[in-house]
Image 1 (tube, rainbow, N blue to C red):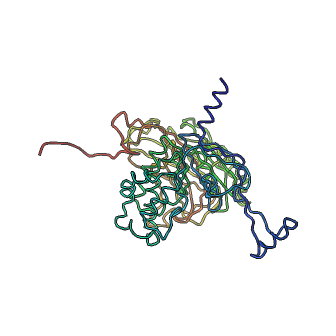
Image 2: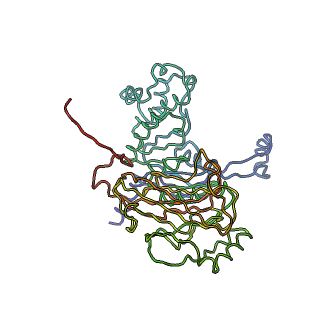
Image 3: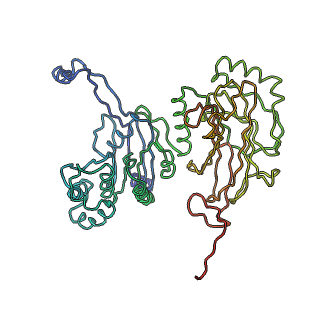
Length: 474
């Protein structure tokens, strides 16, 4: 019985990777390559560069794995070894099923051949027979939609036309494992939507490996994420958690600063407690440490309070937020403007809401302050967001000094959203929308539920607020 269960689990595996690694030899001079051959290993004239190392994972049928990481992190190297176009230096990779891959623009095409000739060439490389290509040729050409250029050499194609043809062949090869690198970024909007609809259909029953720098597309397509950095696994698992950590790391690297801040996801509370001092001295400079000491004493007792019954207070700071800590969010309130005494947890759409954010300046800033919020669904896909930056008045925000408090307010009509859970994240920054320093970013501080589908069907991510509708005979 255990043997049959083991066989069933093996048959469910589409890709098996064990301790995979790829090493390149880097030579200082071209002639050292020849000398290295002559020395026969007695002397080493190169240095090793591991583009990928110690990667072990399994991808099961029906899974969608997103792969993220900065340029040079090893994403393309991993995909090439999975597809068999690159030989591993160590470890092993096995795939079970036909692989269709779009790794590079024009890969598998002969630039001297016409588009039609390349349909047969690329189709053969993907495992299709001549008769199968003949049967699907009309559908392939209709999907590519490049007209009479199909009879012209591919070397005369634009990057968008080459992408259209390559993806059209791939889409009609009946792949069991679909591998898509970032080549789709060169396509036009209409064709990208066509590709995304195909990818959505594939992921329902097949295996998808999807590489992108765009967290939104990763969140909408994938159910797991692998984060690579310098050729090694930095994180893997839940889409939302990994993308939040990746975003934090990108901010920390670009600003060379990091304050480990995140509010614990919790329900809004109504207890009237004093805000405790928060120990952030490890992340702040000397001047900020002195300020923190001051505000941990009696002055903190007189901190302003929001005049609403239901607020989030006593925000706990944990490991997956980010910011330099010069301004800290202390209190957040979410309420219905018509019923401010009621706790806002469930929405149907169309409510008039108000958000108020109270923050404390720990370290003086010469740059104007910006506060913003983002609403995301359970996958981490951004639904909408707003901030206080005014394009026409880029220096409009206050420039606080240490010890001062700031208050940001938002009033808006909540759109109708598909039923489910949504999280609201908050951020406070100094500068402009295009160039700023993140002072404090708090992931998933407020959780709300939408029951909009109980009142009317929602098609898409959000529903529009109709002022009226009718149908009549003319």
